[in-house]
Amino acid sequence: MEKNKIVVVGAGPAGMMAAIRAAEVGQQVTLIERNSRPGKKLLLSGKGRCNLTNTCELGAFLRRFSRNGEFLRDAFRKFFHQELIQFFEKRGLKLKVERQLRVFPVSNRSNSILEVLKKELSNNKVKVIYKARMKDVFIREQKVRGLLLEDSRVIPADKIILATGGASYSFTGSSLDGINLARKLGHQIVELRPGLVPLETRQNYPRLLEGLTLKNIRLKFSDFKKELISEIGELLFTDFGISGPLVLSLSGEIADWLKISNNIFVEIDFKPALSAEQLEARFLREFNENPKKTMKNILKGFLPQRMVKVFIEIAKINPDKKTSQITQEERRRMIKLLKGFRLDILRTRPLEEAMVTRGGVSLKEINPRTMESRLVPGLYFCGEMIDVDADTGGFNLQAAFSTGYLAGESAAL
Ligand SMILES: Cc1cc2nc3c(=O)[nH]c(=O)nc-3n(C[C@H](O)[C@H](O)[C@H](O)COP(=O)(O)OP(=O)(O)OC[C@H]3O[C@@H](n4cnc5c(N)ncnc54)[C@H](O)[C@@H]3O)c2cc1C
Image (cartoon, rainbow, N blue to C red; front, side, top):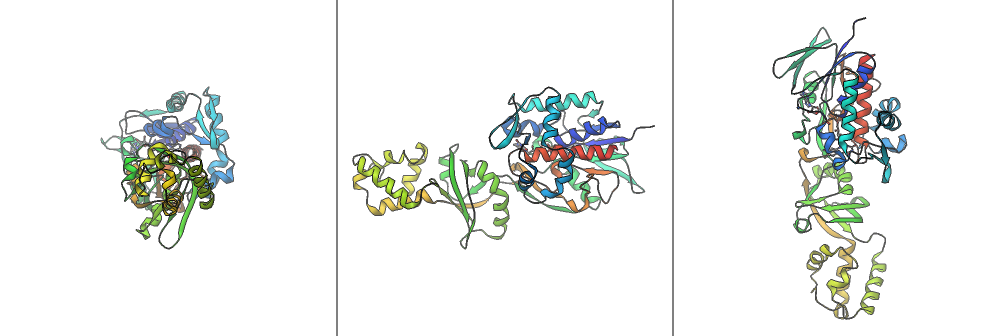
């Protein structure tokens, strides 16, 4: 029997997995990639270490998606973290589980993940065409016929799988080409917004503290009317504001609030385990035991060294004042600041700088059991271009691999 011609567009994790699976099932598969090599974003992932998945159980896994996690249930039923881990380990790559159940290659190099995928493409005789940018698809009588490349080449196809990625880090090749094509073919596109993105602040202290990480602090985001979210985690100061795991995780929600309010601010609680009263008791004890110590030296026991200078300036305390001379009013001012160091949020960094894109091809018109378009038979979607996105921790890559696997298998069978 003649094989079906399946063309996959985009050699990111979703597209590579789709191509491998479709070829494993026995079809003739071509993978089109606009770059001269595959997986450029994959190589950057996990700070170059690639946090490829997470071993938490399915319910908890789905809850890490901002919305729409339920849509992935079928894809995860077919190919979840156990299967992904097995996929790499069976091919000789050792993986390890780190804190919060994040999975990384033992080599700590994302390239080792990419090498397995490249080898598998080759073992399964997937024809990979690099430096080939999809421009359009041919559809006649409701059937997919082929693909037009930017350089006018035509690639015949019975089925097409789009895996062109999200809207950010465009230098890696991820493009809106697939999303724009889906729109042209009648698909709804859910507004593209940044997810996992740093935040810009009005104040410039973060610039002075650039590179400083604060661990186990509480961030409390509010507008003037109410508290919005409050969570404990890790923060990183940058030259324009704040980033780090906790900020990135909360950034999607903050982005939505910033659309309706320009009065969002965050308070950093440096000592979330202590109440203001307990903190005051600790201050008093320190002051009694060290009456001659300067305030700047005492604060080193409460804050990272780099933070002390900025903190003391904002608290309007003379850094060289002895603890015995600190007034009750000054002490209370410092306690208030330790429990609520405020920064006004101006905006998120642009979509281009987001780790994931929120929004994309609407799920209403994709069959979750197959990833096939409900509007154009023979056209499939997978990876970040569809309207799913998740927290940090390996969830986004697992979604890309799982939807890729399902799209590849469904197109092939
Ligand atoms: C800095 C950074 C770190 C990250 N770290 C992690 C992490 O540790 N864990 C995690 O789970 N997630 C992480 N992510 C998110 C994760 O990398 C993405 O969600 C994932 O790469 C999406 O895979 P994809 O295959 O859908 O798209 P992409 O990886 O974006 O791949 C799309 C591919 O399509 C190609 N392409 C685009 N348009 C065309 C066209 N017209 N014709 C031909 N080819 C085309 C592109 O060149 C690209 O190769 C990170 C993201 C960033 C930016």
